[in-house]
Length: 458
Ligand code: GDP
Image 1 (tube, rainbow, N blue to C red):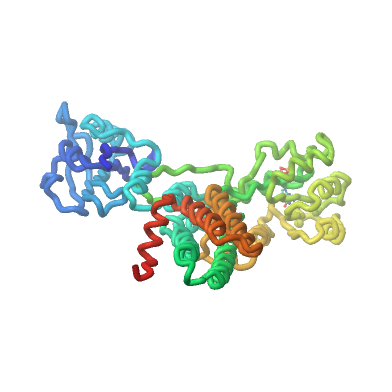
Image 2: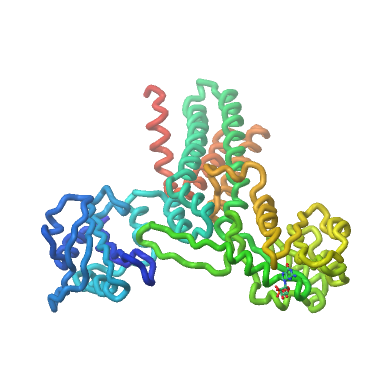
């Protein structure tokens, strides 16, 4: 595929020590060379080397920028095309001028994600890896970043590949049965189908089990802070926001978003909903009535209910407990520096099995416990394992569900003694649906692969 040469500023907009303009495409090196002057011509230097020099304006001949230029010949590059990276260090204005010169010399401004798209189109990465790049850029916590990195490295791809391989083998057995009925492989085929099918089903289930966590890591845990006026909701918010860590990605071709409404609590990204309305939520129950406020609170995946240690439980407090009945919540009894008026036994009783944490946000006490409680709520069991393959992408989740259904159909068909070619249809569909995750389902390839693997001596 012949593609034009694209260029873009690959580092985040804003003040930085260096900024990189990246070019990718057949003419990348030639275009850069027309603007560059250094010891050697860029068209003559070896691949994967870096060179000091200056960028000159093509018309006026004035020096635009002092640069280090990296020259990378395809196909051993991210896009598999020729890549040039121009490291500038004169700030935003000059990096923009460098880009303008490059565009004047014939490169086209890259669309968002176009470098990654080329990597995919040129077979350098598969679809789920490409999606991993996107996730990486948007990762809100270190852990989310690890998930995205895992995906980029192809960890999910590998799992999907193994699953598809297992399905392929079962289809092959069905094929044998259809093509060589004299083998009378019926019995064997059914039992292998059942065994392999069940294995695949379990593995899909394992992947789907990570989906909820994965999705939260990706999108953040929708969190609402509620409580009566003056219990310390805003103080709590501030104290959590204080913990926010910006994620720095060094993946070229990407920009970073700093997402203010996200708070990173020990690797759990909280997406604080309605923070602007925190001051209004106090009368949420009165305003909307218990039923309607329940509806609203249901949208939240985590509720932080704040109570006042220095006051007795009020009717409003109890109404709030009523409103969050059955929902995931952490009860925060704040202001422990004040003399105790609240009945903690009553609070625990109202909390049911949900965690109760006492804090003095003013004195910075109990925040650790609160953060630990949030973390525990989220990372249960072995979900925390660092090398875990999380499925975090909605498209992948949907496809996994579809594939699961297809495998289930196949197993059901076996049970009721359907002819094997009917079963084959379901298995093939599952194979295709999984293939869509990595972006390479082509029906013909099933046939090709099948026969390259199962020669049957003919
Ligand atoms: P909100 O109305 O629920 O958002 O409550 P705020 O966060 O605005 O806090 C109300 C008042 O309580 C402020 O004056 C805070 O400084 C104070 N406050 C917050 N946390 C504590 C605490 O742990 N102890 C004490 N004594 N005061 C606190």
